[in-house]
Length: 242
Image (cartoon, rainbow, N blue to C red; front, side, top):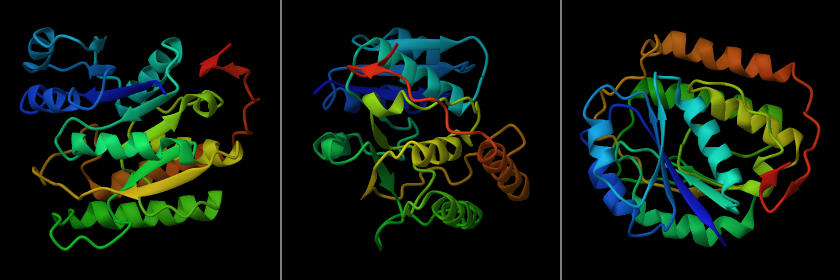
């Protein structure tokens, strides 16, 4: 099985070198999507060999970075893509588990709330509350039984992922993805991941640091996607859309 590990980043000079070094221990194919970083991240990336890099000239959003990563995986004929964050909230050593679990479902989704973790970090209260609200709504609309709709640590089967038509550029893209995945009958399995908040004050930007504005944005993404008919099934072979 061919796996691509994709890491979307934006201004990650504190973490990028360490994260990519650790990811290399578990992955042969690595893609970094630099979403218009303005700190030392581009310079650091230039000094790291053995990875592919997509560079956005300006900040386009988390969703745009993942959409570009999916397209890259499709062009490379990878069977699976694993996505993970670059802020050290995800443990690269768990890539092995995501690879092992990959054949069990079309999407293997990490969950920080699947089971109690007494020694994990406590999530910021507003983030946990919004996550619970949106996860519950997604479950009502899709029939899935998710415990964490927002975790970015996932494995996707490319042969099914390419059926979706994802367009949301921001942090709400995973919500669009869940609704489309349900329309197409993609299977989902969750596995537990640790709750790690090394920097609880880390913000979202784009006006989303206000909890009410963030929740409203997520609801708007869901409402827009509810009005969209399921896109026609594409002809996918070997994980590529034709």
